[in-house]
Length: 69
Image (cartoon, rainbow, N blue to C red; front, top):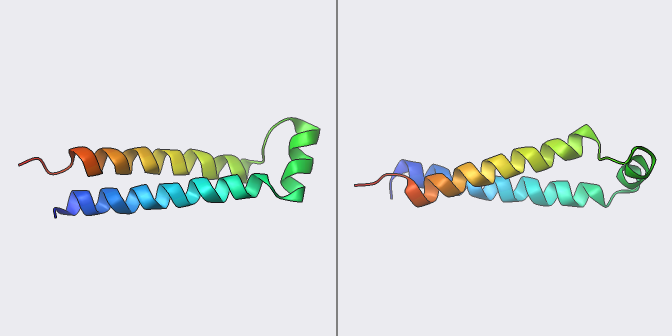
């Protein structure tokens, strides 16, 4: 297996973990209170979703299209 595919798999797994952490953060009492009062999530929760989404997409692209022979 080529290094780019291994890196892609690692990024994909890391991205999914960040997305799950972001989802779990939305269920917290403080987060629900903040979202109720302001109508949006905290910056930390949004960074989990944005970072996880970017990492997952880059990882998927590297896994599928990386190291063509």
